[in-house]
Length: 245
Length: 230
Image (cartoon, rainbow over all chains, first blue to last red; front, side, top):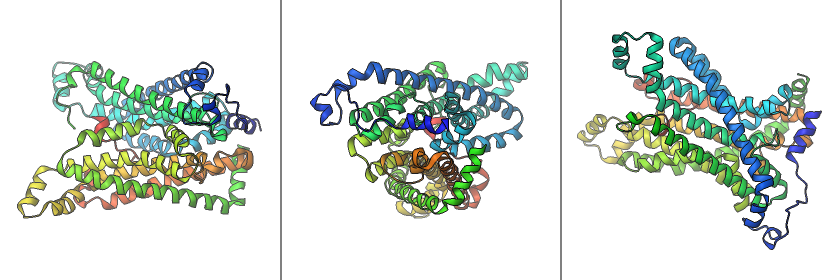
């Protein structure tokens, strides 16, 4: 029953909204009221943004660790690839709104629930890209490494993984953006992140809150996307020319 | 685990409700996919055929991927208000990019020799597109549609928040349907997504020309497009 109560609290904002302040813009519910936004940046949007970033970093971090190990195993023993692909593919296909709810009876209305769901959406993307990156290392290069007397582990660490970095980072990029997107829905479970002002604004139909939270989430996703793209360029100077399409 | 037992009981007692909500959601998603196909396929085929606009075709999908669906719906709520139109726009915004990108990449990637041969046989550009490029591009093209469809079914669940109806109406309304109803609808929508994914995977296999089948991508809903993995 606690579950039911908690969700209600997270989902239901007061029907008569406390828009705070009472400028004409807010009273007429114009598209975007800058005053209201700046007045509530400190108590609503900034904490939500920071929570959102925290949720995302934890999920991508854990997801990467799991996928990395799984990908190394699948790279070494090819028969593990299909089972993990299918497993992570099924997780990826489950609509997020459903997955969050299905975990509630098991792990409750907690950050754990949110993180489990978010991590499960990163697995397919990260696993696939790490494996593809490793497989994409040209056979000649591998041969050359062997010819130089590198052991299997040395080849992996010094040759294969560095060459796989662009594909791996492309995976991290997509996974991060996906998690930023899905973490908004997590606000339905715990009152955290940028989804929380969105869900709160729904019963009140207060435009500024929708647009501010929506734009911040979109901005965060685009910023993360660009940041990782820049990291990818910096980390792989050799890949700058002649990347096959 | 009692919660899940209750959820199955709810399913048994409310089959009609679940079916009608599923119908609503399928209608919404079907319409969104349909419109997205009408927009994205011709554009993607054309750009791929003339080998132009790679920048547009690939970046649209990167940007599209970066758009959080709930944020798109929220911004739509601000601009378009509650209702069907908002939800439709949001779903189309999310569905067009993967279809467009894959259509472009698929056609653009058809081997030049095959196109050359077709031209040498006297086919006109339209024939080259329809009889040579399109069949060879179908698997990848279809992978884009599949990605989009799975996106749309998942996001269609959120549509309830913007007055779009569907199973999300139950999932996001614990006050009326209790945890049992929420869980039942969540399982139902999960099954729906997996079914759509499975059915489209099957269709993708069927539309793959026999000669290409051995090269067909392995299982999994996302076929990373050129813009991301390379």
